[in-house]
Length: 314
Image (spheres, helix red, strand yellow):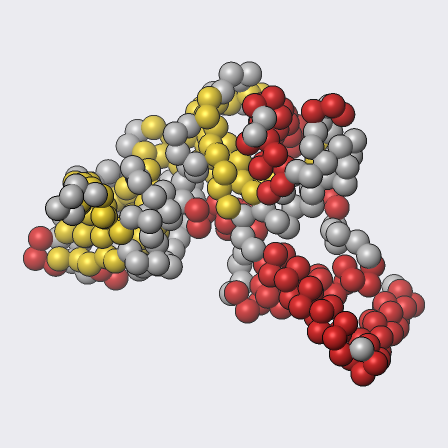
């Protein structure tokens, strides 16, 4: 182990010496190289994004509704060629509830090129879906129904929850950037695209069917398994339009009897869904239009125990 560490340290030293020489002898190439590394580092730091959501059923070990969020993530390697396996990552299953309905959500991530290619070809899309379901069965020891349908919403649960599930982030963004930078340096030295290939199960699509290219307002939270029964609060959701009847924003009013401070409210808003958890209340809504999360505002009217969320449309 000690000799291995010394060898790696030697390689790192040689690597930085080469960069120093390049900076002196060819500043233009050095600048181009650094900019390329910054670009690739930014891609590695990019979070997964929702693409589409499927609904099916878990048959065993316990029958339950299952939602599978198919996400695109640049950290997942693209397949090397049409004949190589297609890498994917399967997140841990999370049980959730709305009113009395309990269901499971599982997040699955592919490289963006893979999903974008499948978006143009229904056969490829079906195969990627079947691949994801097969991998879930093998990894989690589930038996799934063979039937499924694509939902009208792109993701079940909040986007923040999905990102935490797939990325496993328990540190702040500074720590994350430092971690990514270290991984990038090691990749340069080892000439490898993945530092630990075991993290990405490899499944193979049929040769002739694979493409070779293929703010938080109050506090962002992670949806976890509900241990106690949560009440669904009364709410009113409406789309506000201008004089020409052009939709401008979504306004949501939520009645929270017994709540007397905004500090008790946990709110998470993504482009197409919203989650509120406070005391014994829980409300998760799929939004009818895409909203601008950066311009979304929330205020709490103490006298009426009412939370008002205003979400401008994109």
